[in-house]
Image 1 (cartoon, rainbow, N blue to C red):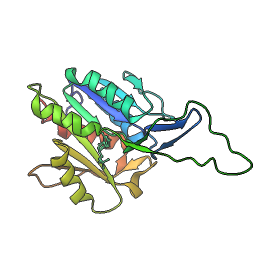
Image 2: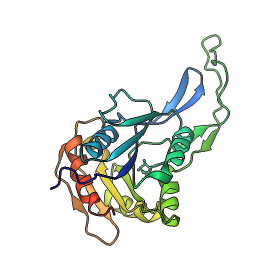
Image 3: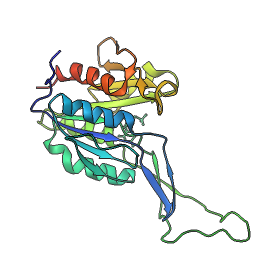
Image 4: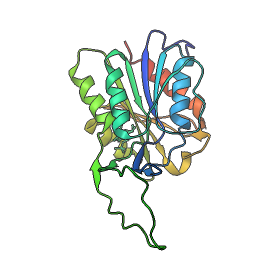
Length: 222
Ligand code: C5P
């Protein structure tokens, strides 16, 4: 168990939800406290890595030593990640990215008229899949980028995690059951890797769980 298992590594982490604006004061978002992603960033720094955190809107303090880039929408998170990815050795996608954005959000606040709903016809756009694009980049580039995704599911965790490994070209997927960890301080993670038996990590606070997962992943980094 090496305390500095990630010295020399450059780690990019996404965290939190994304926020998709409807108008300047409203929007749709996903439920994510950001605790897991921020814990992952702190864990990577504690293990000696240089850490960049691309975060959607959350109420979490940026961990000491971590460089944070604040974003709002999935598209802005995608841009921030793609701008930084070329220099990285490890990507961990923890963010709960909204699958859909709003086409043409209105410039002004939508008003309610005489107690009636504003008749908002929301048209959705498909957001980029950040993890899949990073996985694609890593599979092509000669750079030794390791790609880790998250699977927070309410059921069939193993099946979904295994399919994400292939579909998103990820080297590892960290799985957890949403009902056991959403907003919680503790998490029960399982580490999935292609052609390997799933590796359960004991339930513990998110920081310790992140450190345990990164210790194992670090053995895979060059
Ligand atoms: O497809 P799904 O959302 O279930 O996959 C979860 C994983 O994919 C997480 O690692 C999440 O951060 C990432 N993801 C992403 N961009 C999306 C959707 C999911 O990076 N648009």
